Image (cartoon, rainbow, N blue to C red; front, side, top):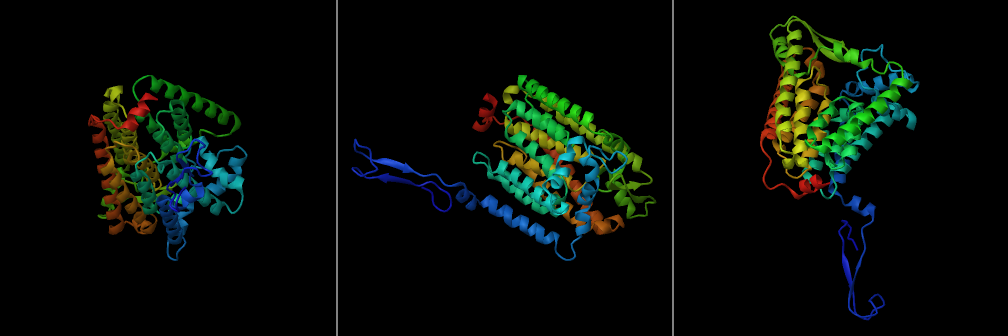
Amino acid sequence: MTDDAGSEVSVRAPEGSATAPEAGGATTLRWTARPGRRWAGDRFIWAWVLTRLLMLAICFSPGYPLRSTISDVVLYHEWGPALAEGRFPGDDARWQYPPLAVLPLLLPRVLGGQYGITFMLCALAADLAILCLLRSKDRAPAGAWCWITGIFLLGPICLFRFDLFVTIPVVAALLWPGRHRLFGVLMAVGALMKAWPVALAFALRRDRTAVRVAVACAATGALVAGAVTIAGDGVWSFLRAQRDRGAEIEAVAATPINVARLFGWTGEVRYQYGSWELVGPGVGAAVAASLVITVVGLVLLAVPVLRRDPREWTPAAGADAVLAGVLVLVVGGRVLSPQYLIWVLGVAAACLATAGSRQRLPAAMVLAAAALTHLGYPILWRLLNEGRFLPNAVLTLRNALLVAAAVLAVRAVWRRPRKDTPRQGAAAVRR
């Protein structure tokens, strides 16, 4: 039997009683907790409920920049009628997404109700789904706490962007690394919603399992891509818009230009391609620098991943490599929108939930970066566009934290695994 907290209680029946065996002796009666009671006593669920209620209270409080927070949902709603008819908004430079991004964008239309409210509720459901993946009994609790805390620190914007939906298949893949074909399917689905889940490739063990994952991923990707290409119009138009993008004001490579703005930089901040970009002297160099950062970072990460003996692979080693890869992509990108931190938080939480991870310090730095990101957007956003000192200082510190986290994460991958491989990792390897 279980008490109110959901723990199991055993009751022994006395000899000769109606519940005892005919041969005499004692027997143990067990009752398992009903799911409702287990959830009612779950500290993770309570913490999630309280922090999300507080997020909503902050979001709808007087003075909070709600308009900036919900701006993308307004755009999703605007695209909805065309997407429902199979027409992708290729003529709109703000459309920057692979074809499966239509799924979370159309979901509120299917469910009905006021679009923005329904989207927010769907995002909360996706948020809770990720927590449920992280809170299972065989996972370290640090992963669930990282997710609960990180999303709260990043703020209400998480509920008004579709990145939570993209993070679900990535976290699921990292927590179930032994299910190779499923891993490949999840990687393909994630990459066709937003490109960054391709970083899951760094989690693969260099043996026949990588082949199974690659085949499943390629087959799923080809099937879905072929279907949407036939059924839709302008499916791949987002590639053109991605090619033409410049340096977003929040990107790491744009940090020197933001500092130069304090000393009379002659360029301007202009809204184009769905974000606020810098236009003027030095921007071309910043874009080139972002490409160099990305290439160098990915090469430095690929070397230890490819050289590692498959026998030394563990689920923690795979998750650690993916976190390093996502951090490199975020740090080296020409665009670093606030919601990109959702990706990093999801992978960091998966690392901390997996026994043997070496990414605790980078994960802590990501949590601090999430808080600074919320301060920068939307709270100080208007002042940042005006080139004021305080938001520039906050943004510079945030970017410095992300760069340091990326360096430490890549360094952790270079370090050889511990000799005492956790039993959880060994079990996953045997599967």
